[in-house]
Structures are given as C-alpha cells and as structure tokens.
Image 1 (cartoon, rainbow, N blue to C red):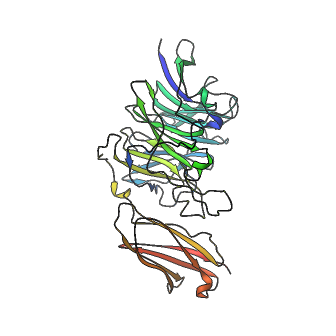
Image 2: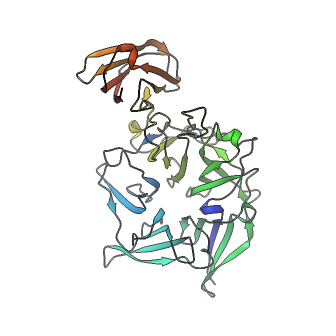
Image 3: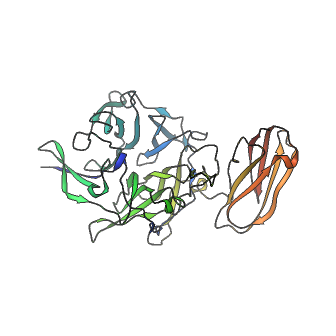
Length: 417
C-alpha cells in the first residue's frame, strides 16, 4: 500500500492561528538582502498577490482581482501576464495559486465545493496545451468552512493551510491508495511557542530543513511595531518536528498616518515562495506603502539570501544587481492631494556612510520653488514637511526631488487650495 503524506495547517479563515503575545518572536539568524519590487511587467503592480514559481524560477503564477495569472521570463524579461483559462478561472473567485514541482499541476483555493473556500487543482493537458479540468481535493481536506492554501513538496507530500483552531493544527494527512482517500497521519500537530496569530502561505526548501510563512501579529503591543511578518522555522531533527517561529530581517514596519486613528498602513509581508536551494525568496508585500501612502495595494517582491542560519556567507546565482539596496528610497507625499501642508517620507539605506541629502521643490515647468533640506544625514528613516502657503503657491502639480550622492529621484504631488 502506497502512502502519500500531507501536513495540513488548519486555521481560522484559511490562516493558522498561532502565537504573538508581548514576548514576541526572535529575529532569524539568517540575513536577506533589501527586498525590491519585482517589476515583472514594466509597470507598478496593481494588487498582485501570492506568488508561486516553477523550480527554475522562470514562470510566475499569481492572483489579481479574483483571477489567477501567469507570466513567463524570456531572455531575462518577464512577459505580459496572461489570465489562465476558464478551467481555472471559471467565474467564481480564485486565490492562492501554488504550482507543483514539475510545473504540471496547479493548486489553488476557490469559492464553492464543500462550502466556503475549497482547495482545487488542475493538471496540465498536453493535448490541449493548456490547463485541463478542475478537481476538488476531497472531503477530508476540504470542509464546510474555509481552506486557503496548499503547498506541494512532492506528489507524496503536501502541506495545506485551512480553517481550524491552533490546538488542532497543523495536522498531517496520508493518502491511502486502498481506501482512495486522505486520512489523519499519526495525530501529528505542530504548535509554535506562544500566543495568537494567523498563518499566511507556506513554502519549504528542497532539503526540508526550513519552512517560510507569513505570521499576523495579534497582540496590540506588537501590532504597533509589527504587522504581518515573514517568518522561518527550522526543522528539529532531534524532536522530529518544526522549531519555533523566527522573524526575517526584511519585514517592514506598519506606519500610522494619523495618531488619533489606530489604522496602520503597510507592514504586511506574506505568502513567501522560497527557491529549492533556499537562496531566493519571493513574497507579497506592501513594502512601500508606508512611503507611498496614496496606495496600500501589495506588490510582489524578491530578496536574496546573504548569510545563512549558520552565519556563513551565501553566493546566490542570479542577477544580484537588481536586488542591491538603493541609496535612498523616496515615498509618495501624504496626504496627496494636500492643502496646505503635506509630508514627504524617505529612507537612507543602512550600511551606508553619512550622505549629503538635498530635497527641492519645483513647479511643473521645472522652475525651482524652494529647498526643504540640504544636509548630511546618517542611515535611517526621515520625514520632511512642506507647506505651500510659505511659498505663496497656486493650485497645481508640483515636483519634489531628492538627491543623495549620485542618486536622484523625483515624484509628483498635487496642491489643491
């Protein structure tokens, strides 16, 4: 009898409920490069979510506006995304695509089936040269509630994220060829060390030693500093289970535009997808939302492993020049449009020496209006204010420009009197 093993995280509304009290989790010993937006299609993403890639990292699947899309990388350039066929996108909402290791089976969560969100899959059809019909994962995996995510380690090992309280999950299931159904395997449950939170996505290295996922902080004390964090757990071979949660160094902090309203912007990093060798990490994030407060839509980002969990430097294959930290990260002014004042946020990359920073305002004709800053600054996050009444400006479009060394970036803002 052949057994297929499945480890299933079964939390509330498709997310594993786990710990996040004031104790907080430690920072992982591994170090990742500054994340950069995966400018896959030459324009800023408009709500692209939940990336999943083939093992060669040359085909990307993702969700946008309730449908699943794909893009192929040719000669180093990502091609225009294509919405998948009606066997996948059949008119009902779909989300959380996850491609198999051989690239020939696509898993995802779709509305309907046994109730709520169910896990489905489509196999690639050579005769159609496209995705074949959809199949439900069945009543043992799916329930009358919500199942959100499935990750295939191999055809014999599958991890899922569903809907169940933390004390009941994650759980391991096995496929019984004789009974032709899934069954609970060895009553296995994994419990992180403390508290409450939600689990978003899951991805595991080929050697099965590291598991990456998104963890939603729940405790208000932590939420002020952390939003939805990327985490890693290491396999404990002695205990034969996963170890505790560790935050990655690339998570972003939530931003509170109005201290009188407890409504944070940004700070959500989730749905990681790790390369087989564990050196390239794709994930969904509103990384720049705290800088670009006019939009909180997520994008897909990529980061490269610089130092592993043992403290050893890592040489990563790929185009590293596209993921090295920028000197300055300039955000969109907030509020925008504004009257009469607005704030401009920018950050100087850590690891740099003190740099000379200059911020100027121009009108739409390129004529200089004024200088907001002209000083040397240390690495860190900064905010500078601009009041249009000081310069007796009329309504219209204005430009603000930051210069730091050889780095220059300009953005538009709208003043409405």
